[in-house]
Image (cartoon, rainbow, N blue to C red; front, side, top):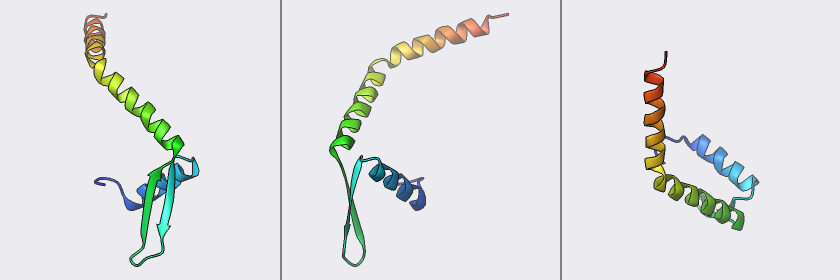
Length: 78
């Protein structure tokens, strides 16, 4: 992954594993190989994040309109 250090990725994956979102499967091979997969809890969380992302995309025009209204009010405030 670009822009993410190996250390930060490892820490994040360890946290996700600890929290029950991912399952870590270390393979006893050379070179070492580790596979990660979502748990049931992880799949449930991913569905919620995906739903929020879809909602955000659908409501983007409303957010832009709110920003414009806010900015216009601020520009003309004493």
